Image 1 (cartoon, rainbow, N blue to C red):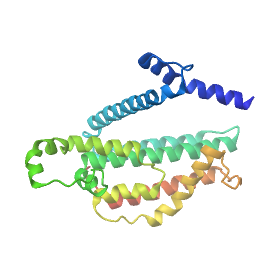
Image 2 (image 1 turned 45 degrees about the vertical axis):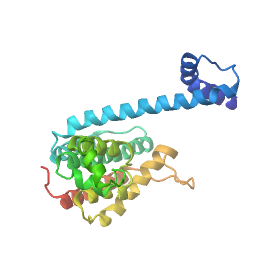
Image 3 (image 1 turned 135 degrees about the horizontal axis):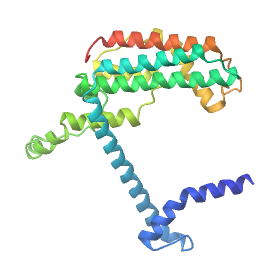
Image 4 (image 1 turned 30 degrees about the horizontal axis):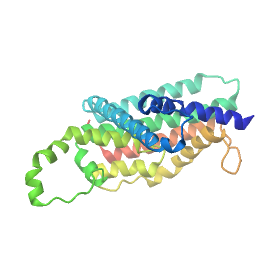
Length: 260
């Protein structure tokens, strides 16, 4: 029964492709498979173009938001969410503590990750660190130009390296390519922007425990890869909050009040 269900799910997932190919190529599922190769490639290119277009418009919308957002705005939103969470934690009386505190770990780590993304985007887009970040993070494809090409393509190069274009490129990267529970990569973002190493190792290690714990909650209902289930209670949630506050406080101290 399981294999039949999987096949049905796969067929359903492929249905949009079948319909697109039938409409644009005039072939259907019963035709010779050899006729499908070019059609499938064309469909995949069509989907890729849609995704690229959506990513572009999303980056443009984010630019309109973050160009007006001071770095302090990210702090305000984070503090409000954390205070709201703490109030809920102290007033709620869960009927099933085991499930409740698993949900709390997942949620509070999400609050932290959202803050890291918000802070990174605010700092880079509206904190004066756009070009250092773009150059240090290798977002621009390395390409050698001759002096002749530079003279010929000067306008094209300038158009592609305006602050707005670079901002949208950076926002696209920060939205799609960064996992904000990976603290090493999170630190890299800010180090690229600031142009120096940040002293975060002492506060990173305690917080990593809760990044892994949240992963286990989401993917294995709180058990690690060996099948051992972690103890998650109010004390663990409080320790997670403290670790996040220590990390964000140290990060904010390293960044200073730039962009506020």
